[in-house]
Amino acid sequence: MPSIRYHEKYGVRRNDGTPRYPHELIVNEMRQEEYVRTEEDWNAVRPVAEERLRRALS
Figure (tube, rainbow, N blue to C red):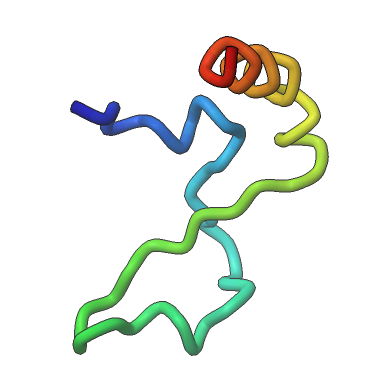
């Protein structure tokens, strides 16, 4: 079963500020949360993500 916090393992966090893509937040008449990842966020988790990929592909 996938982790509920899967996104946090890969540096993605909920955008509580101004939406980057406001027109994409409404889907089937329901408001969605926007999640973002900055380059800094990605660089913080990149070594772990790369190691997981290496293990999965070997």
